[in-house]
Length: 187
Image (cartoon, rainbow, N blue to C red):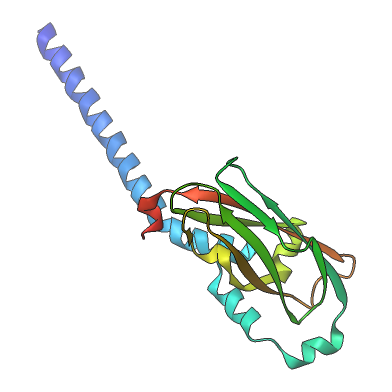
């Protein structure tokens, strides 16, 4: 009789665990499908990776120059991995007019004795300025392949939106250059 009770309680415990695992699996699947729209919302809010923002920046309004004002854009570069990359902006800052296309150049050098691939990760400060800073062309969009010891100039083209709040007259564009594993770089 006690064997029947223990096997019955074991069966109930197994059914309960199976139901819990099924709910967890279905929840994980639903979360996976929700990531795509969530990613789109994050891109819209931050301005990073949004195709819509890139297309808007590429189509510059001719009237935007009439309400332009001068903004200082500073450039920074960091090398989180010492000895792999030399990476720096060509100039420390530029004055740009809002609504007009501008560009900046960075120098990158593979310090390794072998071919390497690097990926630049951008950041913009203050963070609120992100929605007004649109890169139309950037070396950060794709991994950069370098031969051993190769040095070259990398270009970023951008527009600072004319709708930038009046109190904001300085924006910092920073990049960190990371080495990318060859398996990832070949994709």
